[in-house]
Length: 293
Image (cartoon, rainbow, N blue to C red):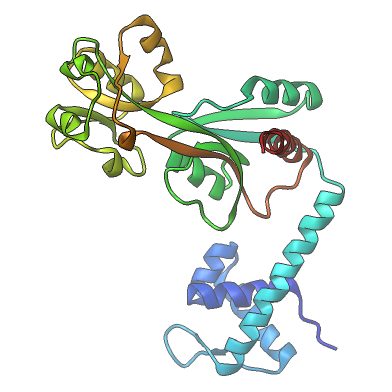
């Protein structure tokens, strides 16, 4: 009977994927010798040479290529088993980080924070605010357990998601700007005047319409330039509502072909969604999403 263990399979898969024992050792936070010995023991257990070590970097043998597929399947099944076991009796997290998109108004924000405060009074909660692309990166890197973000790009396959209400993208300008005097603003009108845009947006180039632009690193900077009548811009409604209500900024009535909404979602890293806090947050948004459908 084989005495293969999961550590051996992990070392084998990581070494094959990274292309060297040294890289595998760094990724697994082990020494080079430990990884080399672990893989050697696996080769003895299965009575097969998995790597050809005659070159500078080890390459998979024919047997190694066949067994690599099986090793990945076994590890995936083990991960599924562990996730299922955690879901049956999830642990309660002591710390939890939510990543919030800096230009998205999170729906049911008060309700979710109240739920966390009431149901998990000892929870150490951390709220971080970042641009959309950085919210996604924070979840992938496990710097945040859940993210609320606009989806300016397709999300990765290793992320789970629950759809949230989209954000309407408004075209805005100062009341004194020439565009504000037009009954309907066409594409050619926007191209005629200077545009302020946020440089950290993932698809900033897609939303850059005018050939004459000012790059702004923050929403505040963009609102200042727009408010002085020097530029027009695009922004999601919640973050310019006070300026619109006060009359400092007006919404431009653009032709229908220019109107757009940006989809939004609650996201998490697949395989890292166990835990009572995680489940409670996703359950609340799953219920609200189902109710709307």
